[in-house]
Image (cartoon, rainbow, N blue to C red; front, side, top):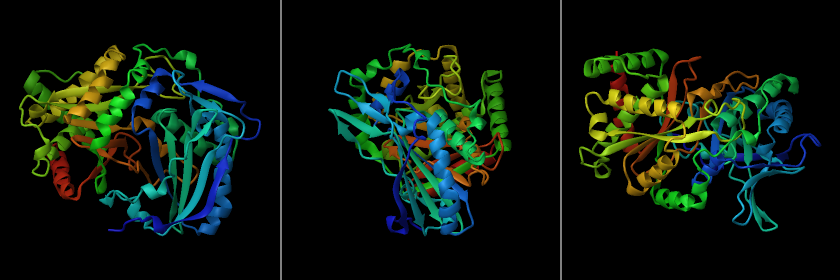
Length: 470
């Protein structure tokens, strides 16, 4: 297996800085909403995303023809998405952090070249989990001005694989934007590039920054002042693990339908009626919940698992609130609530496990749709407690609804999109979900990281489960 060492990635253009066009954005500040401030509690707020594209030409051609247009279109995009060129400012307490943009603020942009095997990196097979971090920018250093710490919000690294392709690695602060806002930015950048810099192509696709649309319905922001940040970081930090290998698993649209049919059949057998809700998200996440719990019950993990037959297993996901708050889909910032589904571990592992898991997730989604902010504080505090107590938790990140594979700069859809950092936390298992890049709609794909001894076990569990759905 090829390992992408730092030595295989060389800088070909030192960091430059891309700003919005001069005079296009006035000095501005944006307050953090309750949804933004929740992420001040988390130890991992620097998000990373990698987009791989094919480009079968020499590095010199990329530098001469592609790179200048990428920077120009990025500058034009930042004119409309100025918070990504801004700084996150931390004034002395009791003042709260905010986003500040002044003329000249910019995004760090570095270009590197790699001798690694591009086709290996974009594959679905097991790859070393340390291969991809070298392709994303390091978090920019903070600085202090007038007693206020300032952190850049975004950084970008382009890595060229000569005669094969290139990657665009983006790091950004989750305190400033959620996945939908980041996806909006990336697709806008790609759209402007594809349109040759014509900003008119974004006329109906501009971000909305109106913070007056947001009210703190459940006093989420107050958690920041109650020490949730310290509690969360102390609960998570001691248990952080980085497993050796990452793998991508796909569930095709036809397999999704089989899983839905399986849940419907089980529900009729057990309850005498069809399930109330059976979305693609609910059924595929339920399937992964069952598979990961079965992995935890394998010989290599038994020391981590509770033997209590009534012990609960939890499933943690983020639910978007834009529709519920009647916000435009282009609202920029965070607008998600953390939700927690639960079920008896013994039942998730039982004969009707996928029905139990899908029902628990579906019920939590329905509760969210009825009362989106009910128990929001309690859910966040419960998640902290779960980490602290080492209880079983499966967590999903991202969403297939973001449509990230539509990020087409003019070279076609990305060959692959990866989250280069996939940590795990003791008894917490994490996976990232996205739309299946091989299908226009319907299917999904998951990225997970495993220790080497777990690869074959999970592979068997995952594929045997899909076979039994036929």
